[in-house]
Image (cartoon, rainbow, N blue to C red; front, side, top):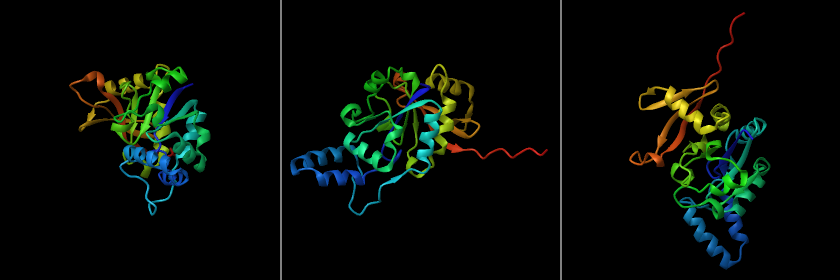
Length: 235
């Protein structure tokens, strides 16, 4: 295994919220009330009958396939329910790309997620894991803050094509965290951030969190952009 990628679900892989309304309509009244209360807790934007339809992020399946072929194992770690997540992924044809789906039943803490169960199940160290999500507060690792996170607050409306080249470049024999540390050391500030320029993309690298508690800081990659291909040389 080249590394383990933990994908958030909503607003990272796609927009799945209509599935929640569908499930609630199937449940008995008592279950619906319980499900509805928990649903309201994990989302400030619950599904609406007239809301947008279910949709996938642009280029996401191509990105998942490329990363699979590159040797990465991929899982979903979501603050929503496993029933909801699995149904949404199956409906869109993405479930086959993930070795496991971890819902709020196993990873949700409220402010960040706990990844201990994921690390145990795949016998992997935190250094060999990368998280992809749209919310630093909700998706970062609260139990292993040293796990590298790719944070894209507007990810649903951005192409997923930026992710494979960044993740591939970030991986190494010693793990994602070691490459992140090297990038930070070797990259000077460009204004207020460090921007690493790769063959296919560029990305900002910095640590987010409370700088009064250095041991709690999370290594974060953000502001991913594709680079234009170099012009062909004239023969």
